[in-house]
Each structure stands twice: as structure tokens, then as C-alpha cells.
Image (cartoon, rainbow, N blue to C red; front, side, top):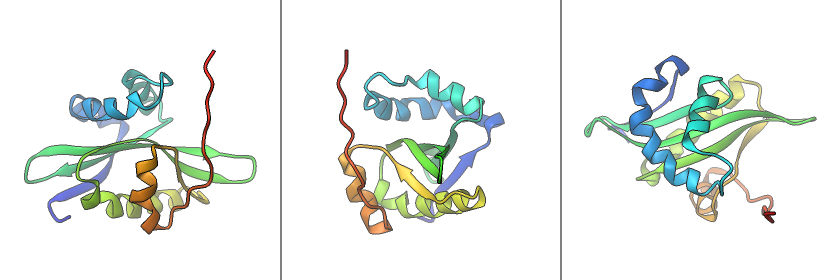
Length: 141
């Protein structure tokens, strides 16, 4: 982990990293089944609806992974929600990313962290205390 940096990108610096982040996010956007395109994510980050987190490999001077989050206010609870996550070498950074996201969530008075994603995320996050709650089904018209 010592050669990896996990950090949130301030909104005013999104343009500095977007050309590197967008191709990584495209793989996650494909799994949104038409709900989002990368330009929608970019807009929501600029509008401060979503936050952009990156994992950078200092040795390669390259972004290897990214996660976007949003704060979701339910009627009785508030959660930091993972929206899009993609990249490589997750086993090297997932624990640090979750540690930092937990700090951010607590600083923003969230009750917890949630993520909607493919089944593979359950395996990656289970040892960090995350539990599968439900399955989403969809029918298109």
C-alpha cells in the first residue's frame, strides 16, 4: 500500500484527472444498464452531488482505480453511498479506501456506508464488515 495514495479529488481539480479517470469509470458505467454515462458522472461531481475518490500508484504515476460516492438522506437514516467503483488491484487498496470513506461518512454525520454493485463487490467487502441486504430486480419497457 505504501506506493498507493487514496484520496478525494476536490471539485475544482476534477479536470486535472478526468482524462485518466473517465476510461476507468466506463467499465462501471456499462453496468449501470443505461442509467448513466460518464458525462453524467462528471456533471454530478461538478455539481457536488457525487464525490470522486482515486487510487494513484506513485511509482507508475498513474491512477489505477476510482470510486464515486454521494450522501443519501433517507427519511430516518443518512448513508454515504458508493455509486461507481472500478479499477485494478483492488486487494491492494480496498481496505484503505474503506477506512477513508468511513472517516468521510462519519465527518458528514452518516449512519453508515452502502454500495450497490455487482456480486463481486460482496466478496471484496465482506471481510470489512459489509453485509448483503437485498437483490435488485429490473424490468425494462
